[in-house]
Image: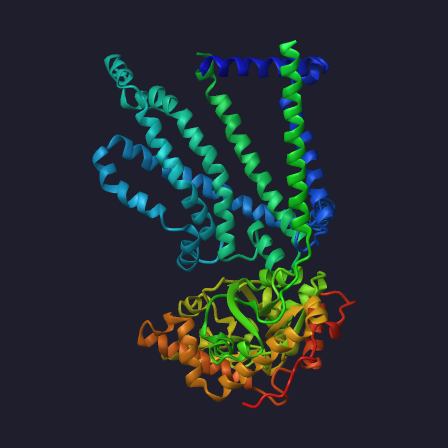
Length: 279
Length: 345
């Protein structure tokens, strides 16, 4: 079985090598990246075809052209930037707050098993409460401004970052701790030169998840109460104006934000983990 | 030779698989594009209502329990959801009947949804501005300089608010409007806002039952916009007028019976919303909500279920001024009274 799988893999690799060889060198080196816009064009074509063949009205499924026109209108009159900037503020605030609290608590729980045993059931149980049900309460408790939305966002990313922090810190081999101690390293030195680098791969993986979840958190907060933001724009377009193209515009902007955040974390990961790849 | 035969056989299999896939996809597309038609007499019809099961839908629960829909040869099942989603489903033909507000019908038609309002239910626009008695907000002019909470800056509540401002010669900048979601009760009692926009039979009733002194400014006193009613789509009106007539007549009978027998109507509604009997407090609030709602269904003169052109024209004007609807809006096509029949209470 494994021999036939490896022969299939090499056959595929050989086929891909032959495809690459048909293109100029500068294209073949960047084929994976260039495939992205090609895929986007193809998907847009399929979308257009579905709308045309199904004869769907704009309020049900707008055509790509209609969404594009709506995007241009919303971007040029300032609507889109106004709402995007609010949501971005909530996302970045929520990411910052969630990251700080989750990593601090994660460090504490990783270092103090007794505390972890005490707090874990409550932390896990808290995750079973749908954030969409909590959001209106947070608004009543913390007001109608950005604070409540930032809190909803922070709570959304808290758990994956917390778990990854604990797992990352506990993945450090005990031998390395012993080595550092035998070399006379202080607690700060152990943290700075051993625990942080060792935990970083797992922590950054959790941050990638958190970064995309933060977009959802901000939108959930805005769905509960807001008069600005991309989540509000989705509601306004869908429930207030029957403007489905505008709703699509807001959704695509949210997707773009999530992709950019994921890309930024990936870039940070590449930068910080060069030592890991070099091994 | 054996290798060439294998290659040919493999290619044949691939072609067959591809052809089968294309056939399956085409069949799926044809089925998906097939026009949806309702069945004939004795059919099951879904009547979708905005929000969640509530005693406020008593007339329709009564119509089912008393057999009014069955008399018309229709077996009605209820569904619930967001009003705007229901309108889209009716507009696309995936749903035939729904309960929705007239202002949403105006918006929907302006976006090309072929929905039609066939029966008026609420004769008075239910949106109101409520404040605690000690705040001293007794008339629209008292709102100047105050902080008012709104569930959202769209929808019937916001449209009603703009109509109130307009009719009271107030500018938007005269009042500080804050989006508070559906937290009106907490926002008022915690002093986060001076007044809150709500439905007159919801939050004010809840607070009154708890003994809280209130002042309520009814939008309908200065601008009676169109409100909740029975809607269907143009296709149903054109191709199944008997069904639309039957649904309208049954709904009107349910409404008339509810107006004449509110106590019994509550008992019937409680079968569909058993949570209202969870405790005495909830029951008291729910009874009060139904009583207050009946005031809005019974208000004014004229035939039960008949839409007023003046109310529709006013609503369209308000929404045109807000920029929600264009100047080309055809008010006359948004509603019809052709299915309204005289019903005794």
